[in-house]
Length: 244
Image (cartoon, rainbow, N blue to C red; front, top):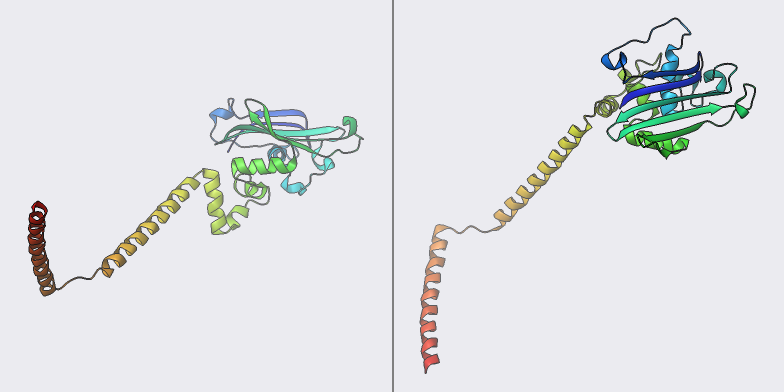
């Protein structure tokens, strides 16, 4: 999964529309960069916008963001959208929250979410449940795993290190895309087990066949020769009778 573009509107200290395009210079030319600024400048809000757009949640505000917590003061709406690329293609995930009539004193309306396939702008999910399901299907990461592996929330940077070996391995495979090697390993193991079973079956079949001693083999060969001579004689006699 790769973040391509982030657009925020009226989130906490970032009033108005804020857009960051990671596909354009100088960000596209930088392999590593830092988010810096004074307290309250909106550094964490940029990261909050990513999780809001993808999962409709922010770690520091709980499972359901309060409008007072995420919406800029004296505004009637806020939103976050992120465009990302994964093995399935490019997509845009959108989260929106507004008050009635978009008035600052209006009643808060239920949040809206949708997932859009790019570049055709095809909406593939329009509810919270469907969007969560589709995000998980496309990226392999749910909200908790995303926080532990891709975006370590402030104060929770040790969550990934504290994860168990099995969970940490699964996270690394999903993030780095190396899960295919585990599938190859498992397939090779299954193939080897099948080959060993087939070999064992052949050995049992071979052991079930009696092996004659030399003297027994010689005796059977002599009997076979006598029967062959007898068949020859009977065949000649049959031909003679047929002529008569």
